[in-house]
Image (cartoon, rainbow, N blue to C red; front, side):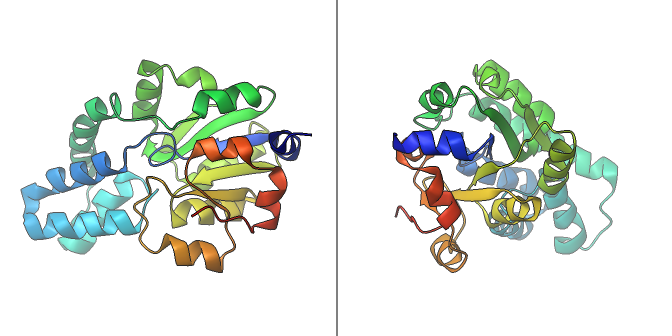
Amino acid sequence: MSAFAGIRETFATLVFDCDGVILDSNRIKTDAFRQVALRYGAEAAEALVQYHVLNGGISRYRKFEHLLRDILGRAASEAEVKVLADAYGECVFRELLGCAVSHGLHELRDITAGQGWMVVSGGDEKELRRVFSARRLAPLFDRGIHGSPATKEQILEREIASRNLVLPALFIGDSRYDHEAANRAGLLFAFARGWTEFQGWEEYCAVNRIPVINSISDLLSLSGQVFIDGHDHRR
């Protein structure tokens, strides 16, 4: 039996974060947060960038609420948050159409034809679906492309309850929040290190016994047991 046959037999569903996992888009989004927040000054913009990097995977709406309420000390009205989120979306959309896609994605889909695939991202859901459609990636994800304003916890809970996300499942992410959301929902987890902006990921993964992969292509040569045991760390 091949190594990958073990993953086919172990998991009914594969769940993917988008930024830093499917797309090399973390830098694009970090730069966009900086550009949008500069209207409030360089100090506020850098504070938002730091918060963004420390809280990868959380939606833009929560990050702009943090900018207004906690960094600037003012009310975070729904209208102003929307203005900022829309400006951010305009900054990133074109860049997302041209950034790199993870190696091995289509090959992995061919090998796992019998398994459900879904995206669970902190990115805006409508924007994600536009990008994935334009890049002809949408058909790979038969269980849907899901994003904010719902949180990852809400998405996972909803999709499990509706039986669209069938357990056992593996979540591939690149942030602390991805791991925490997966763990709370009862999914096993793999950390993709290649494009992550998570500073301190090595210690975090070691302490929490999280298997580490460089990119999606590594899944082509790993067995399902690796993610159950939590011992294999590809660094």
